Amino acid sequence: MSRAAARHAARSLRHAIEQHGAVRIVVATGASQFAFLEALTGMPGIDWSRVEMFHLDEYVGLAIGHPASFRRYLLERLINPVGITHYHLLDCEREPARVAERVGQELAAAPIDVAFIGIGENGHLAFNDPPADFATDRPYLVVSLDAACRRQQVGEGWFASVDDVPLQAVSMSIRQILSAREIICVVPDRRKAEAVRAAVEGSVTPASPASILQSHSNTTIYLDGESAALLARATRGLLLEGDDE
Image (tube, rainbow, N blue to C red; front, side, top):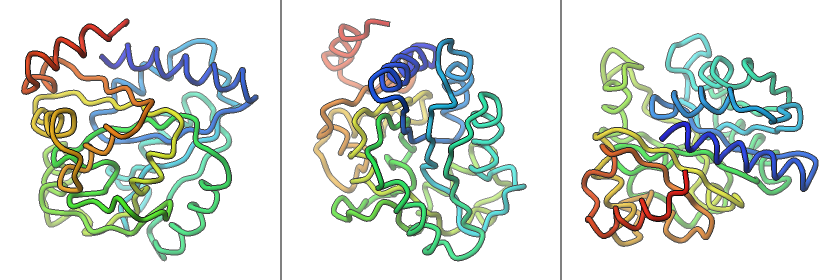
């Protein structure tokens, strides 16, 4: 699944660079993206010097040296390995609202070509936990993390206990994510199966933030057998039929 998603992502990056001379991307983090980013950084023919990268979300008050820091994650797993020089990270250790405003202005300066995202166990996109704000047009928001989201971070091994997980984060907004010309969503693991079912087969509702992807005309969701396990047989058949990887 991750290799197929990485091949797709590499084609999209190459095409945007060929068409526009550069490409602007948004990159998700978290355990679900490990294999995808590892595969993507090994793809040939991508001129990473022409890539401008934006950060999807970050915890408020977390130092970059902390193992759960998404700035650290991106530096170690993408930026440094491929040599991206034009990137925008969310330093939310202090004044998160000001950081959200500043990086949001940089983000909104031009269209995003491709957004690489995932889906949380509670159906969140970025850190937009349910009920998500589908209306705001601000690029980044300071949000509160719900209990399910915080438990997921412990379950993935980023924190020792729920009490250690920050209560807030800066997150890219739903409307900003949807403004990307293309969205590639990578969602492995059985623990995401219920959220995937709600997103793919349920109604579009803030109670299932990822369901809003149904409204985007150029979104591809990559699933494995575990994350697709709860989809109806007809839906699974359509997904497999449309998979050219």
